[in-house]
Length: 393
Ligand SMILES: Cc1cc2nc3c(=O)[nH]c(=O)nc-3n(C[C@H](O)[C@H](O)[C@H](O)COP(=O)(O)OP(=O)(O)OC[C@H]3O[C@@H](n4cnc5c(N)ncnc54)[C@H](O)[C@@H]3O)c2cc1C
Image 1 (tube, rainbow, N blue to C red):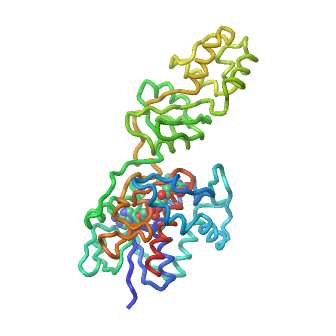
Image 2 (cartoon, rainbow, N blue to C red):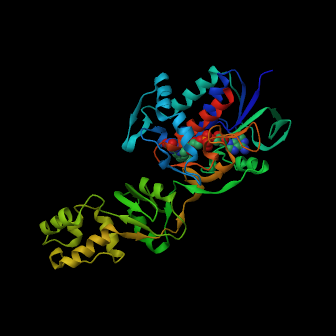
Image 3 (tube, helix red, strand yellow):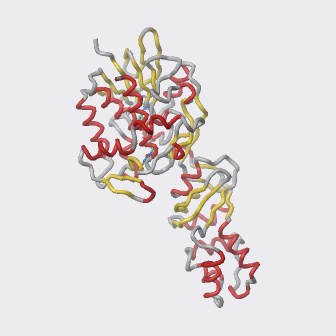
């Protein structure tokens, strides 16, 4: 008799794993609570899906065990996924920092995954909510459409971000049911909200983006910052948000490419007779400089009134702007969930639960979260491959 495998979640990890297993003649069913497969993929990368990155290493991932992801990432790499993308004749392009996006639409990636599933005769049971899982010689999945029995279960239920897309905590519940610890979860790659006095001033800049280097005690990112009507967003902020603890200040360098001794002093020298506002307007948006003045961070004087020490102080103000976020926008807009099924309880080679044979976890449900830039999809592909390979060999 064929081994019956049930995969919970028709997202990136679940679909990829299903195709691989189906093509090795397993009886594979994918269950999902949505109407359509790959809903998050369709929304990703502004509709173009940033499906991987040219430069991937364990350093691009957050996890209580930073080594856990290494094995899977090296056994199914970005080059392996690119080979598949090429096989399906999907056109793509590179954006900043090695990020690869579809030329046409994220739908291309969903179609790729669906075609691979079709080749493996994978069955789909959509609009079916998994509510509980038990084990008694076989797995029993309690769903909104009745009980499903299965020899193997692969949990690919993702994280909690974008609850409007039907995300649930069932993956964590299943883990706990089988005595597998779950690392506390929170929103990652998420915009910051600001305390009211600062927000009142900065919200007027909504839509303006500036290149910055943002840092905290752990890490720094040189990318764009975007002002929004709720606070701060843009790639620099999303990246640092995954490393941020509530109450912690972040440091924003507004002149990431300007050295004091050479360029900044030269700029001041050239504009000696100008006001500070007009001088700085050559390198920063004027409305932002006005906002810094409202915050009493800049004086309303002329450049020539500044002595050397005051020039240094001005440079320091612009390169060490300290902001204490009020919080984050939470799962509603987060791109990823930090934490999840503890890597301690899983084999990094097979993604199988150490304590429960035939039960595996793949993708974002695990305590592995990537940076912005295609890293989360690569984790979905790599962990799904590791799981499928272990079952089929
Ligand atoms: C707006 C947005 C844009 C993003 N853009 C990118 C990007 O460009 N590049 C990148 O690398 N990453 C991106 N990400 C992150 C990436 O989408 C996820 O990391 C990835 O989709 C995780 O794949 P997964 O298969 O583990 O989970 P998911 O894709 O989340 O799939 C999980 C599936 O399980 C289903 N499910 C959950 N609970 C149940 C239940 N109880 N019963 C039945 N089904 C259930 C869900 O409906 C869902 O279909 C983005 C995320 C968001 C929110």
